[in-house]
Length: 276
Ligand SMILES: Nc1ncnc2c1ncn2[C@@H]1O[C@H](COP(=O)(O)OP(=O)(O)O)[C@@H](O)[C@H]1O
Ligand SMILES: [Mg+2]
Image 1 (cartoon, rainbow, N blue to C red):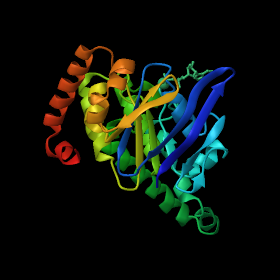
Image 2 (cartoon, rainbow, N blue to C red):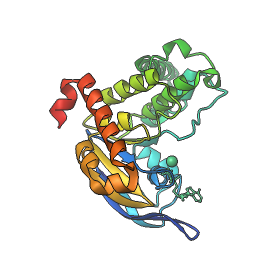
Image 3 (cartoon, rainbow, N blue to C red):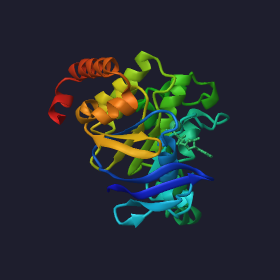
């Protein structure tokens, strides 16, 4: 399923935060959205997830228009997200944080539970197994019964992604998932996200960490003052003089970024080379 922005616009009063943005996000690819602070990156995520309304234009998943739907309808259509500032259920355990988000896949089972309670047990067990599996994937199984609010910051970031994934979304939106992570945690995150790439899923990552973006993303959209400045592969973005002038700064900066991206590609080896 392809996520499509068509002539998208967002206005807060007189402030035009997003101006005539049209682009497509394909399944099976990791898409990056970059740009300076205030460029409109979070606004794009918020509109896609239905947290903010769209002022004009549209957001669609294949032929289905999402903009205009209620937030829960958008979630049920398969859009899941994380937040720039972590928003977990702090007073619930790690496992409960996933379990409460699991229900969309289970809708339709409820009548069976009413007429025959063992169904409920099965469902409960199934839900717990699925959630524990996801926790293990993110190395969080040891925290399953700890309160989410008590986790170290880096683990909370991972839990937020796990919670977004528990609905098996068609579109996964990550708003600055590496913010506040140390080098080790960022490397772990990069590896996990590359494993989550799937033909059935659109992945969109808003991120400031250029190493991560250049190493992980297949396509990058560059935002500048609410407009789509450039889009292309990491190599094309790095080579674009528009991007260099508007966002990446001096020639020295781009050299640094290229060198860092080169290093990371070498570390990731064949997988990245096949892509280019
Ligand atoms: N809830 C809001 N109300 C009013 N203005 C907002 C709101 N959210 C974002 N903006 C404005 O929209 C613009 C884009 O912000 P944002 O999408 O957060 O940028 P980014 O995530 O790229 O840093 C900024 O000018 C910001 O001040
Ligand atoms: Mg933001």
